[in-house]
Length: 562
Image (cartoon, rainbow, N blue to C red):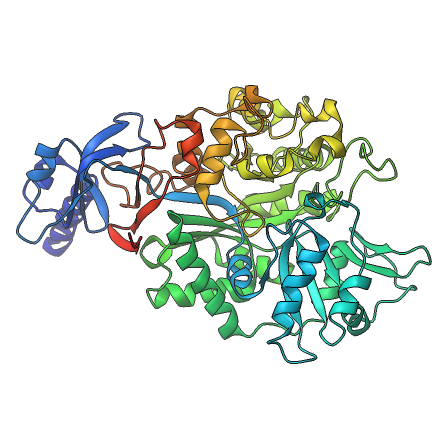
């Protein structure tokens, strides 16, 4: 009985300490005091402070310098900001961790402005790659070339006849291969398009080199699988890269069984070093196993959460795979692709509710989004559930009729502001003027009563989360185009943009009591910036530098200044 009483008292003391009780906090010195700066907390109760104190990896005090000094002991480290700005650690609410790691190893095609430039980069890699070995790259976008039609394999095949080549489009929803790759795939004129995919063909019906959405599976089965060690190395590279840009958290939008095992392995080794919210890929045996195991929350000192699954409804707008209610404005022959049958989405949404998991479904086109909302509505009717926080990943093009359905159903639109500034040059060509009114419609959604967790979808876009911050508040590219912003009535305020990549991202992962703001009791994840993104002119936002990144009060990245 006495031991139970002692244990109860100890737990009460811990609870008071973690909650930042001032009486307890006054008696114990902090591990780290951050002072002499402008600290944006993303906490409405106290939005801006000049100092904070951290103990045991959590915030124990936010306020003025005098209060922080009272918690400074002989072993306390002091971080003098010298007037610089601190924001909560940023979270990318939709990204692909292994994809980023692999992109750092493969041929980087982002920013290429012609097919010839793509080929030149691949030829350069071919010089150091043994003949017969695959060359893999990612990042091309024919919409950035002078000729925006799909490329064909001939020029690539002539330049690299001795290497099978696979080059993913920037959005990951189409891939270009050369003749040797087509040969190794065993694809011929007689090969039929798979469900939810398309093989682009020449005038004679032969594979022309581009494979869209589910047709990419024909390529991927021909490429030797990465070893477990290679995948683990790629994850580590990705984590280091995220830290460099001020990310302390990421929602990994589709993790395989092997990747989930590696996350746990890294967690046990104390090497995860990031708040990783993993979505289980659409693979029935893996989902079954995790449904049986149940949601896993804050494993390995709050670095891993597994409580959601990721499915796909349609493809991407740039590759005309996004499912639209009406035909594409620039190709009346198609309304896009359904990567999954709606019944599949409904089934797994219902099963997720029963197992206590969140459902996150990729949908870009207005038809794709409507079908997902219909599936969610059917699942919730069959199994009513409070606070389920189902998500639509991207929610990029919406019918006006469907915008209020997000709030009505309790569904979160998880969006990536940087997609708007990448797509705005050609989205009108795909959609026509009328549908643009429901494209990247942040303000319309916010006013309907939802929050928007922000992200990048890297490696589709650059890792830097401040690109999405700038896009959110200006709807302009890095050059300030167009003047006044692209459909500027849909902009976010700076406060909303900050919360979209901190507190709202945490909410979208059921983490708002642990992460997302610099509040006493929460984990001490923060970023030091060289300028105040909440006050500088829009034109200067793109020049902001991350000086240091901190996870749990521990520095994981520091910029080397000249």
